[in-house]
Image (cartoon, rainbow, N blue to C red; front, side, top):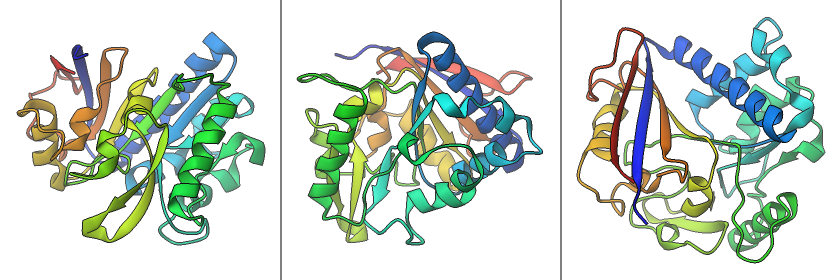
Amino acid sequence: MPHKLKIEYFVEPDAASLAERAARHFVEETERAVAARGRARIAVSGGSTPKAAFKLLADPAQPWRARMPWDKLELYWVDERCVPPDHPDSNYRMTREAMLDYVPLTSAQVHRMEGELEPEAAAARYESALRNGFRLEGAETPRFDLIALGMGPDGHTASLFPHTAALNEVSRLAVANHVQNKDAWRITLTRPVINQGASVFFLIAGADKAQVLKEVMTGPRDPGRLPSQFIAPAGGILTLLLDKAAAALLPVTDKQGYGFFEREG
């Protein structure tokens, strides 16, 4: 059912300060989850913008590595390309090289999507991993403590691309999705799983995202063309962490770079 969605956004002047904001957000939301439930289960995305934040989280010269409760963290992925884990396009490889190789997470805490498998098998295995990890019963949906999303210039998020079959999937937790214009398969969490997250945020940078971000957030509803419009967390709040270039066409923020508006979810 549609519900009122509050969209709050924080605008940073450049890429470096956005990475800093993102690293702080990861740590603060993880700390909040651990304080409330004793552990934190988060799902992350690929791309150059989260990579910068992961590097800060892993850097011993920064405050975040020492603050992050690594021993209470379970790490999952929002989506993955159907490639081996050592492939240059692998989201897992990017995360490993930027962060995992330098932080005290055990292999048992890291739950990657097996992109080297046949796509349907990889999706089925990830769904099983989610059901086991979250101890789900029946038609229950996992509730991640934090889900980090990106947005492409075409309005896609996760591997929910425009006019693809995965957009219509509401009973599975993870699916294989064929992206015709890339002639490639992806594995992705489905939109009900994303929207069940306790805290869901978009991390978006660059002038090439400004127009689509405006359309997604303030334009007419057309989620088949702009899948990011499907993201409407059940908790009623969606957070955007943006650089100044990406936020250029959104309503003006206050002096601290904060803004918000409401729309139907």
